[in-house]
Length: 352
Image (cartoon, rainbow, N blue to C red; front, side, top):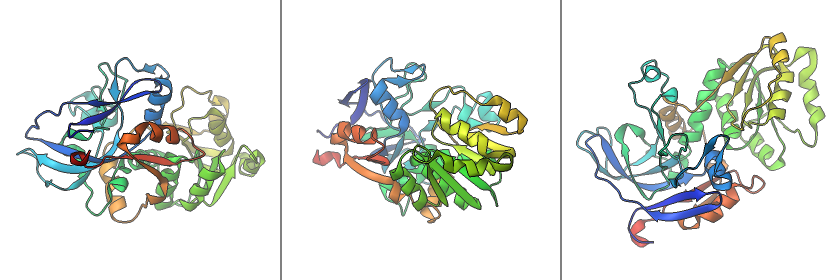
């Protein structure tokens, strides 16, 4: 590789390429970032493996990636609070701040959102798996004291913080988390920090359930091998106060609804396409159903929680690949039996 800006670009399912991208001049309120680490997310895997998900399909080549951290190479004259050489976590969320929802404080629902690595709009929003990237200064959160790998986990942690906030108070509550991938395990950590009294985790993989225990789950149940273990939580109309559904799988949602006590809360943050919802049970038990989509203010909170030691994400990063090995990284990340969070490491371009 040369010293040029290199991007990891998906053209179609299983068609991942390295391409040279131009780096534009920075504006007064912008910063030039030399990327250091980037995590592969579920949406990246959908583009890589299937060319999209649901109705969202690739219609042009798109750089992937939105869980990233890097060092500041240059800053504009109007960018305050940042320094050249500083490690920053980069929020992939760029709301317009002028539409109806932004003005209401619901920036995650911005009508003109620019979110890295998204094929929702056309032209697509190019992603952040690029060795150099110009970003708005307000996307950068100082990550002093963290490693690049840790700082790159700010985005998924912010997703979980937003979801737990949607659930309301967790203090003294019994919580069910279904799906124990990176989002599920981070949700367990956040739930524990938010005062949950008891956390039950479910998945169909013993490997992910072991990680869930390490992250703070009091009980971990393999619903493929021992589905009967959830029956205890269905007694007396339900034993669970809050169900945080992280898998996007319809059976997980249904099992959680059966376990929720009357007046309980279901928060759906796993994205897996449309699902059949047991609406009659929701109605009869007066269960509150809340969605959870992305984040906004939670991103800086996520960075501060890691910097202060309240959340330790190290055990979730199971694999790190040089960006030159991106295809192998995506293949490993696609195999849940072998990985949790897979990251790309952007080495010094001058040595490439």
